[in-house]
Length: 594
Image (cartoon, rainbow, N blue to C red; front, side, top):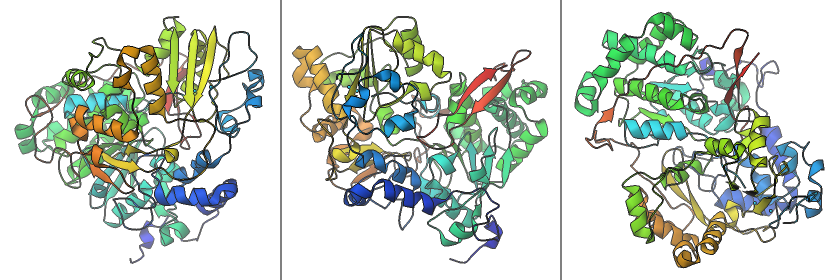
């Protein structure tokens, strides 16, 4: 491959004046941390799937590029697989645990046994986990627009696309291996743009460790940055659509043939005055026009977005505004074009797609009832953030949190901590201790329940690009009596409803995959995954390639959305926090301060 010095971040090898990652030093640190379990660690890398972000792997390979697939997110999570058990004596007095950061609590070791802490106890006697927040807004908006809550393209479409735009996303830190894909996209001539309040250093230039010239000289990535205020993306996108429709820079044939609501959405943004759009977006009319001109000049383009768009009260509207712009350009169902809500964890895409949601819509409700042999609840349940509010009002008797930490995923940790403390019984099901577990409680709890890691069980994960991948069991260290999550869920359900015990207990993960294939037609084929490397991509490489959308009339829907009034009151201003490093710092969120 010929060198392209014009793409280099610096002509000085490993320029000490540049802020950059030190991948090889970090790799050495990971090796040292796992020195007691190196054979097990190597088997995990060679046989397992990625526990980190969601590009999708089998062993050290992926389905986007030839060669080795490995990133620091996966390596940094390795210690969770290889660490020894936590000494239960450390949990005897929770007061000593409360000042510890989550990083320090994780370092105590894996939870080996279930534990319980009753009111009046200083510590735990028996243990459990929590839930994560991310693309719920994307799922809702995309289902309303195109009928599916998933990316419409694949990572291979990046390579050869004319334009890739990142909205509210920090891929160099949170999906680091994608920078290798972006490197090859740049080599093919892709232009890269960023829409974000903060121009991430890693999107300006990055050192890709698996590419020799990039590892030495770094690579320039983003060609341009379009700064917006925190939460101002919706107004920015409406301004862009206003220009596109006024100038006729849209795919008229596609919109006439495959969409509905285009004229209404165009009229809606035409009626929004530029003064309001500038004030609410935090940018100028000229900047929005410059962005629209960039879209006009690109035959194919891909929009990639993350928490910066979704974690707002108006997150659904913002994603719908983004979909409006993508549809206007006809960038759905085509090669080298698409709309990609990039995932930060390897379990969230599939969890949503198989029905893990507060309420089931038809036809899923009826189909699940037919497969399971008993009716599903007809009411709509609470979302994760609504559960925290309900706990604060005293409206929950029990709170079972699996695999997450609300104190580090929602704004205002102090306020978040108050709600669960008011719940009678609080259950944390996790693999390690977290900062929520030692919080005060009213009656029984918290009850931490320990989980088995992915490498200790057979299962599947769904990647960002809708690829369902088999995750084999990897021989190695096992901790205490840790069980797979599914086994815990099934056993509890069976004891709560013994009359349905045979319908809710499973004897193996294969039995679960068999049931998913019957209950979720989208996942038909999952029952055939049984060995390392087994995978399939539902919907194919490009979703909706036939131009028929998963809506009642087969057409995509434009939506008229209005930017909220979000200017801070006198004497206050917005502050945007960012997730600077995956799994180590809080998620992106918005707060208001004086």
